[in-house]
Length: 493
Image (cartoon, rainbow, N blue to C red; front, side):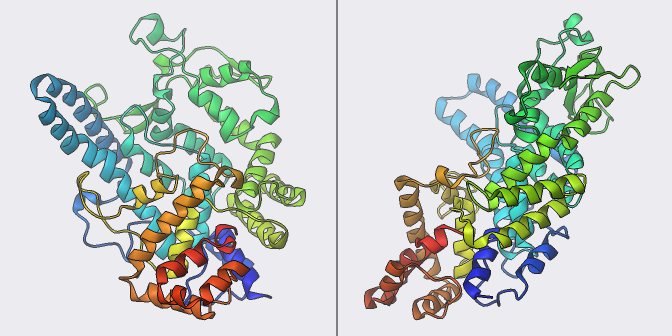
């Protein structure tokens, strides 16, 4: 088994193997073991321990109670700021917004989540698991939106992690009914036209198709299934009344998170894909039945299998790979551990005949893994805090997590990331990372090994190999970074 193939495989399903660690002797078993467990996630140090120098408010939010309280605090603060606009000068108002909204919610809330995501990928127990989590958190996209939902984004994405060891139906149900998704796609405003709330004019809200459409288009069937606008409308009406429960004066003492508001739900039956969904005694069960049917639909298996293969293998993955993943999904009734193992096997089986131009985030993590460089550590307490910040560096690369511009997620096709501008951004980022590595003895040693030719696992292309032999490149590690990490071997996996 050639070491370069094993190295490529570890970068295909994870982020590579650090230079001071041996490559796995059984790559498939190595990867399979990592999707069979639930690794913890936090802002980590290289030793795998939680970073200790962060202030208490930088702790990840876990319980639904603290998530929803944080969400409501953000909303109240935003409402209060509108009143402050009438009382303060322009500068004082900008300072007030910076201190009360931009810093704690728009900046720090996302920084800690992105930092946890990146450091867990680098120093956590199972980088293969993290790679699959990146897929699912992209598939079920929730990003900062227009309802002050910043505190919901990270907890929603992390809520998918334990469900990766279950079946797809459970993950789909959680994703669709989680307050993060309900708020992001405005389903908390989705109100049936014949509901009690609408007829009695308790609300100005009406039908909102956002979640109903994405449930069919993105999360399950895909347009290739041939559903119609009528099916979108049926799914939307079934979703009416599903809202977020927050700690306000109208819901004191009630369980926070998600609830079904019968007063906003469209009564009667609704039709989706030729099936009527009716529930006289428990209207909320209509959504449960619809989610079950969509999760088990053959078109969903086809859509997910193809999307997983495009994400991990190739823009045009082999038909045999898609078939094997689809069969694993159907035969296991959507067991995700089984599906993940099928993807891993397909990656290994078709390794030499497929290639993937890695996304900015994956490439960034590969560079840090292979070079032994730590990600930027700066906490952006204010907008003027000096130092490099991970989300902004990713933004310079074209993928500013978690600010995905569309519900369909970040692009998964190689062709969407290949352009002169995108390549130039990676070169400029390498200059930044190389400067960081100058202060890291381990990173410098890793690059010296690469220049010396002892990094036999990832052969650079001929031009890069020639550059690495030049005295001026060997004398300047920044040039070595450019020659090596911008080579095709590291841009493609």
